Amino acid sequence: MTEQTRASPAAAAGAPGGGSSPAGPEPVRAPRRIARPGTITAGLARIGGTSIFAVRLVAACAPALARPSLIVQQIYNAGARSLIIIMLSGLFTGMVLGLQGAYLLSRFGSENLLGVAAALSLLRELGPVLTSLLFAGRAGTALTSEIGLMRATDQLTAIEMMAVDPMKYVAAPRFLGGFIAMPLLTAVFNIIGLFGAQLIGVWERGIDPGAFWSQMQSSVVFRDVGEGIAKSLVFGFVVSLIAVYEGYHSEPTAEGVGLATTRTVVASSVLTLLLDYMLTAAFM
Amino acid sequence: MARPEPPPAVANGVSATPPGSAAAQDAIVDAREVHYSIGGRVIFSGVTLQVRRGRITAVMGPSGTGKTTLLRLITAQAIPDSGQLLVWGRDVSKLRSREVFAMRRRMGMLFQNGALLTDLDVFENVAFPLREHAHLTESLIRDIVLTKLNAVGLRGAAHLMPAELSGGMARRVALARAIVMDPELLIYDEPFVGLDPIALGVILRLIQKMNEALGITSIVVSHDVKELATIAHDSYLISEGRVVASGTPQELSEGGSPIVKQFMSGSPDGPVPFHYPAPDLCAQLLEGAGE
Image 1 (cartoon, chains in turn orange, purple):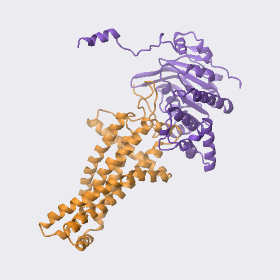
Image 2 (image 1 turned 120 degrees about the horizontal axis):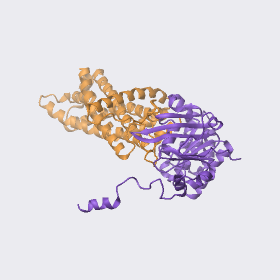
Image 3 (image 1 turned 135 degrees about the vertical axis):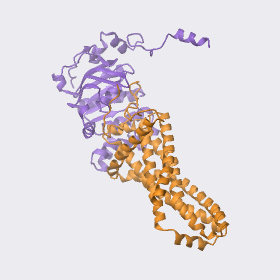
Image 4 (image 1 turned 90 degrees about the vertical axis):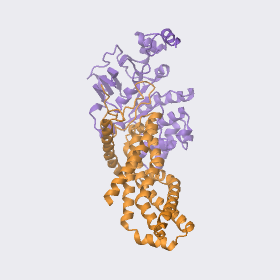
């Protein structure tokens, strides 16, 4: 006989127990895996579970907006605390672009196009994709482990017992924080990346700064910027959703939280690259 | 305050109070032949008990008998496989999500580990239910929170974060949070574990005082027979998925069944085995000796 749990959104959330008795600490409220990981059934169940969770999460976002301080706090946690790694990565990515671009373009006598090449690479591809991968590793894992630990220490159950829906108080603000932070971080990555490309192209390789910027200004159109923004919004949605989902449904043990964190990084990275291909093809 | 009339003593899991009786009508929690299993393992096989209004009801039993699970059923965190579990006259298995939340607003629950929100300080943890449900001014919230914290002796710790508290302090804060909305029903899951004697005495008196002064109904799940005996009006002993005895703590102490005697006296010998089922120790040791 299987355990029955209430099918309501709130009831599906709690992690009960904490009991010393064998009957107490079981991870009752977390939806159970239907089949062993690795099977097709498990994969489909996972996709289905994530989709249903996504609908519930989006529905919980409107009430969560009534608590703007929580969302601002999560934007700070997911965004501001990721700034250093994003800025450093953006700088080095731009510097590599400057080196490689200048080398490649010099073979065709087109070094002055370095600004365009760097801008298009960053705005359309590298900015959104690398930011998403870094975001998954930095903020996504933090989200998953935080929510997973809240489950393991009965905090989600306590919130439920205080007649507050954890979807609205815990999940939605964190999801919104990540979703809003991603495009902002992408913008920072792009700006710093362009600075890095200019640093190498202009200062080291001697490309004319006027040509670097004017070529960029004349060749980059809003569609290029729009593609990057669209990608960062999609990646922000997907990575934040996965991070919150995995934390919310993690087993309430140290091992369970660790596994959920790993799943967040793996799923986010693979989906980022897959969706990048699909979006790029769609924008062509 | 005069002690209310105790429930009829039972043995062998027979129904404690017939449905429709005065006691059943006065019951805030009325469980009738509740069955519940987890993953094929039977936790309850026909539990029948009543928690009556304005009384302190103790739920006792050996480890692993599902005392915490019973609280989860009462609070609608899980639903029984069969049987009927009425809380304030409503069958919890038939409540909608909104009704479950409405029911929980009338309850307070103290978790074994406190379950404080780790990103909020002590003050904000206690203020959390007020901020979510009561539209009060900041000054009134402050006064209520400080009053509740004072009741558990932690007014001076209002600024501390949960990570800075000892286990006992965390549970006292959790108690302050559980009573901040002045609930009609307070549920305590192992409230005495890890408390020093002073804190234990304070919590005991607090449970009793809230019952006597405010008429709050309490359910206390605990192993601490002696402590419970001083405050509980009714008590139930659960073993092997059923209520094996009920009555006043005094009646249980003088109970006749071997299970009750063993549990109340804390004896390792008796019908409740101390050891988890295992092969003979000598045989198992000799089995590995040849390797």
